[in-house]
Length: 126
Image (cartoon, rainbow, N blue to C red; front, side, top):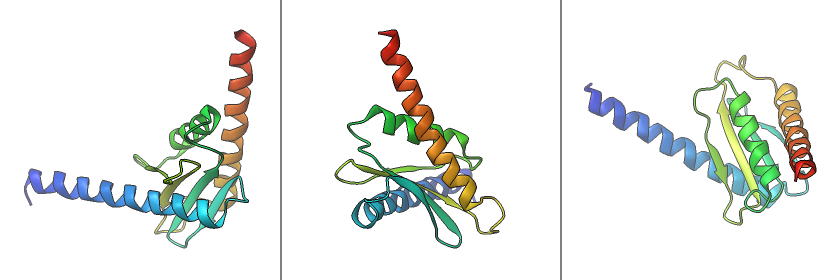
């Protein structure tokens, strides 16, 4: 394979990851909106999600950013539902050894608490 075809395949993989993340965000928004945030174990993938008004709430945006930066996976992709309320990050774990559902759940809740603490600190400074 040439370098150009390698780049194309990498781009194709990223587009597929983005599509999966958007579908996941639509799913959690439609069926799990009552859960504010959490993790879904899908055998070879985990969906990390939040249903907290992503588009309109800077805390939600910060929460997703924190989760993205804490994940060891290379370049995880964020998907947002059409309404802008729900977000999802899909990480793969074919070996079933890279991630633990409880650790990921703790990570997303800790990220939310950190985002809220930062927002309060920013308000106090103003």
